[in-house]
Length: 155
Image (cartoon, rainbow, N blue to C red; front, top):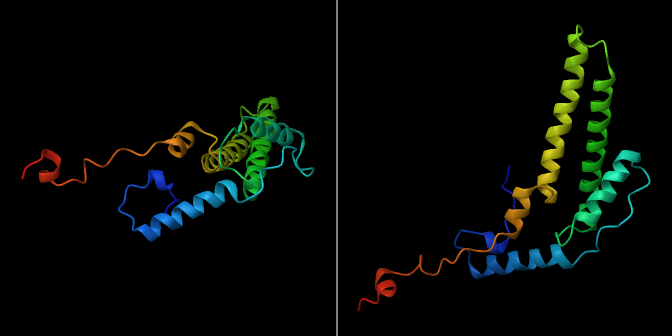
């Protein structure tokens, strides 16, 4: 499987001018070439998923999410709803102490939901690490690429 794309400002490799221009065009189209996400949640989501959609859409700010990312956001909200429902059902089950099948059932659902939520949240920029990675300024590599003669002024 291929690695996730990095922004041009976060790329650490030595890219040719053609590759830099291609990355710049892709970033521009990803940020400005497509319509923005719709503010209202889709009708097919349940009540909890719609509430999560509204919470997230108001908190997105300037993240480069567009209408093409809507299905991923809907999946995130759906998995959150499933997680919420499974957690409530697990807590409401009073007689699960002796039934390991019930405990295993709810644990597996909650584990699967957690993994999917974390993966989608990372892709959408909904956690701290992914937002930091998106907004990390490029390090100043000019001194690193100079020869010793250029760096110290040796003639």
